[in-house]
Image (cartoon, rainbow, N blue to C red; front, top):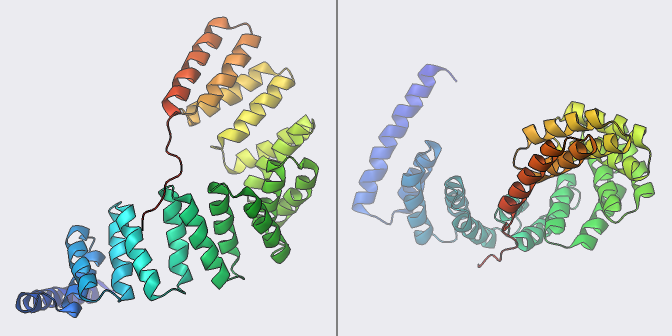
Length: 313
């Protein structure tokens, strides 16, 4: 689109804005003017002006899907999550088969820590689109977050059967095998995931942990380092690598790995806790004591997190 065309469109929209305002001055309940002016402000990022107009439009025409959806989107952009979700729930009552909106809502429910609701809406979307691979992963995570581990495991197994060549499907199934301690069974799907997509870092990290737990330390190091080459900020992988270096007696290397983890993830208490153990083994008692104190302070600051919440419809 050329600059000239953009200027023409902007001029036309400005003229429309004036016309919509005139219409609303004559009839405050004119739905097209309320919606179009609200949409115009939404597009411009003028959310504070868009929201009341869209709310008025929803009051005039409560069964209009687009109004409810747009109002929810405007509220979400203002971080008014609960209000946004209520509007989207109303939109779903109008279009109960809109699985794309369900997909958005599941993510937003999870952000608000409404894990049960996130799982319910993800499963609704999946029931409508049982061949959509990404919906399986959305539902698996939502089930996992809501504490429905067995259901998440079952769904991960179904996804792997449906999408046997998918790196993500193999990883998800392996993750749940690992979670219940079936390490030998997890290794095969992890290697399949790596074969399917060598740029996908998560299988390397999990395979490294599996090999570490099986006592295959050098092989574990190889997989963890491959994963870190793809994603260097993965703290759990660096912690595992630090533990392996400790077990091998390579304390200087363990300290270097954990010090980097602490720098990259300064609010996480675990790197400092492991560092205190490494320093102690190295005979650096003052550094060990200081690292432990930092770890305890960070752990105390991290307590009291928000748990499950119930969304009041």
